[in-house]
Image 1 (tube, rainbow, N blue to C red):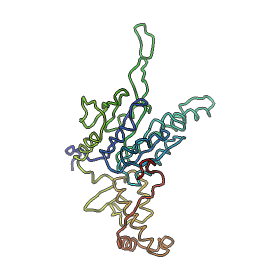
Image 2 (cartoon, rainbow, N blue to C red):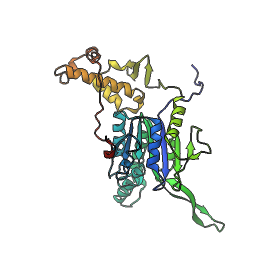
Image 3 (cartoon, one colour):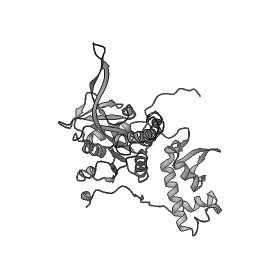
Image 4 (spheres, one colour):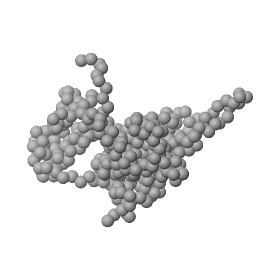
Amino acid sequence: MGLFKKAERKKAFLKIAITGVSGSGKTYSALQLAQGLGDKIAMIDTENGSGELYSNLCGYDVAPMSAPFTPEKYIDYIHEAEQAGYNVLIIDSLSHAWAGEGGVLDFVDKKAATTRSGNSFTAWKDATPKQNKLVDAILQAKMDVIVCMRSKQAYEIVENEKGKKMPIKMGLAPIQRDGLEYEFTVMFDISVERHMAAATKDRTGLFVDWCEVITPQTGKKIRQWCDNGVEITENKFVKLEHGKAYVRTRNGMTDIVELTYDQLEQLLQAPNYSLAHNAIRERLELIEAAQAEIPEMKEQQEDFSAAEIKEAANAKPLNVVANNAVFKTPESGKK
């Protein structure tokens, strides 16, 4: 088989960014966009409860987050939303993970203060992996993700005609690490005057010379573009075929029904197997249902073969409600 094949756009989970100064309407726009992308929406709210102000706009659950805004805390919230089965996650705001209390910059300052020289170079060696893990958690999440970021005035140091270096205003830039914007499918910048949005980065090609207020129709437009792609059913570690999920093990590609509960849990924590995570979760739920019906099965699990657990797990269909410990419906949105 040759190395090259015809290029095809694959279906994927959307990662969208919304930037703007305070008061530009980032939270409102994110909720409007989310309505067009999916029907089960969650929001991580770092903005002192502002995420619940729009509970009359649509149905969504919110998880308030307070300082310290560590990348690890963001990652935990993202995984919670993913495991709870939300279609769309809004992170409002991602800027706190960079410039807030406990964020990356705060970590670097405190780390540098512990060194004799006060030099931050060594601190960045520890901080950069934290930032990268957060970005990976967003990009690898098995749901659409909308991140809101505050904007700031950007400057660039240039030489003038006299050879002196001076700062020049270069417009607005998101409060996050430089270059993060390249990770997103679409990046909208919202003006504070009329809340109009323009796409400063657009891989879809849908928003060339586009400048409008974001509505649910905007989300539907992106959703339709994404759904027209080719379904991803196979990669180096996973193969989805005929309703079954196979994962790469030491014995080659193996049906997940042949794996133990502990092995499945390990795969669920491995990003390389994310394509099979939904199937693995369903399998774990079936096994747990079977365990509940077999007295003392948890204590004696090692005495049961994979075939016995499979038979018990398939004996009864299960309706599982996700155990959601973080996200809740905004109070004013409850009926």
